[in-house]
Image (cartoon, rainbow, N blue to C red; front, side, top):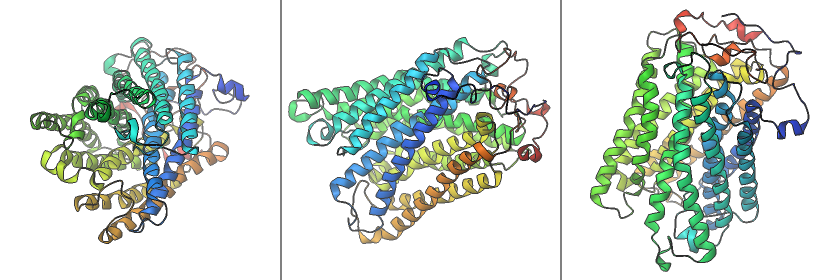
Length: 544
């Protein structure tokens, strides 16, 4: 495939208009993706700041940095910020918004104005949540558990609930846009069996967004009504049922794990074939595994409630279903590994992040099987074992996939090349820092350190010091990409249209793309991931 380097005068989505109003009123899916990128990065650093304070507090056994009430607010606002304002929207809202139309040969998403509305809803929700933080915060945990949230907490529960409620509609609109776009706007020849696996993963994610998010929105609305008007819905002192809240909350919040992880899986399914120079092994199995995860994910919510007083027979059923949902994830890991087997592997930055994703996600998935086993779950519930497992999936999985995607598509997004050496260094630092931070927490949890405690026994200090030191290393690893991405926007070398010699439609347009993506509607005549007929990417391409 030939590639033509852009000239500074060539029209593209970044230089057509320069006023702030042109960005705030844009309906270009690529610009909206960048608006999301700036927004979620802002909230990522807010959530990271809370994490820093948590780790500094846990550096010593005594609660000598903040008071207990403040600590409760710190872990609550860390969790709510990271989950609702970073992890859930990160890949769908940024990479999904940018790439879904281009990958299927469309000029834009099906509903461009609704796409812009979804960003404004996110910003409104973010402003409300920032006001909540600045005026006292909230201390009910990211899960909003009742009856603490419905009556006993005297913090800003209503404000936080309203913020997450509004943010949920942003997710719903994004999911609706993706589903309609994928169904109705594919280029000629782009059949379902030729769709990139990134599209399959976003299609499955959108199903979860559409079916699961309304349940969370209604649940939090009920908490707000109960708290504001004294209704008896979840509060047992008013005749309510707190277990009902847990069932409703986890019916959404376990599938929400796959809202965070499925898009990362889609990224890895693009990166691994490209840097192995091989067709993806078992394309149809990987595609169907995404749908299977979305469907089965709705059937396992109660494994979060094994110690909440539910029936033993129900617990056994949910335990079996929890093992079942691991099967399609294992299929993906197996197929990625088989794709790399005897491939011509290039250890470029995106591939290093993909390696990190596969290793850390596998560790998180295997420890999830421990939590699906009734006997072990009872022992480690509400300990740091759960914290470690969750972060191996969400941070080790979702964030590593997000960084792999940002590095893979950055030449397309910006038209510039980041410094490859710094990228590889950052990937190594993130991997080391992550394991140093969270692996000790598996041990802490197994030997009995409870989560959400601001003080702990002396014998746990060594592992907590390791974890805090690791979090410092991890923070450096996360800061580096932001620095060299910004540097590359001004000083980076111009990128070819297809610096990786990849096969997707997004690589058959300019870097950065024109406003409507393609000068002519492409016609797809090749199978997905046809790397056998693609030349190897040359390092010289990255040094233009």
